[in-house]
Length: 306
Image 1 (cartoon, one colour):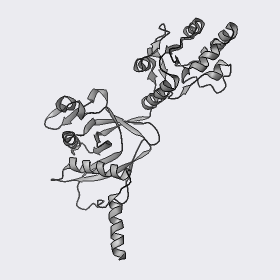
Image 2 (cartoon, helix red, strand yellow):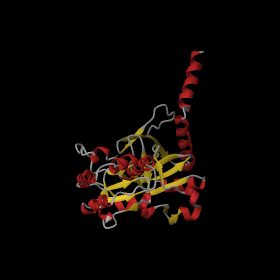
Image 3 (tube, one colour):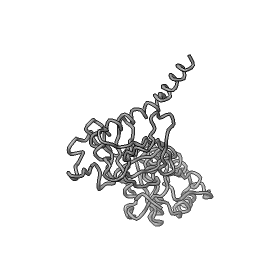
């Protein structure tokens, strides 16, 4: 199962490691859910999800403080005997020495943050949902056009990168060229990113590799973007029938999620960037409640009924 390295987790959230003797690089977080161990401190461990990040807030901390020393020690030992990725104390709270000693004994990392419990909890869930999401890599180009994530797909050499470059020159932003890493954040959201090694690079046949960030500035690139629309480029064939109205949406499936998809025939003289730009703007307009094809159909029906 894919996991997140605890050392990366600590660095990302700028937490303090209170158990420096424990090597965080060999420990992993495999669940995006969290647990607040109030019931576990009371001795109830049935259905305890020990694989989750454990978060201790003011309520749990206050409960532990009012226990008599013998009962508190027993509670610590029972709780820390489970194989947890890490325990986070919020609001700058520092656990007692006997808690830290028991954690070291059981090789459980104990972390501390100054942030409020609700704030850090929400951000941890968001980040882990993204990092631990199901992921696939596909061949394509992802561009942010008017705030819409436009995934351009098609056979190698058909013109995806050239279309992306023209879109960048028109003020839009590149996320990735050639390889798109897609993560399913939830049932409706797909996020596309670039592999670290190819980030912000575009390959242009006959020229080679160009660095978009260096050539066009930081405003021309973006690290990640939701995937809202797919454009499939294909060679134009005279015998094929292509949608000319757009009354019915077509979809493609990525990681089990349906995404609106348009098949775009390529022939000399067509400006791919302008067409992609129009497709993104039209898709955005549809999401705002206006469908040009349906409006035309309504006008035709009204005209025929007169």
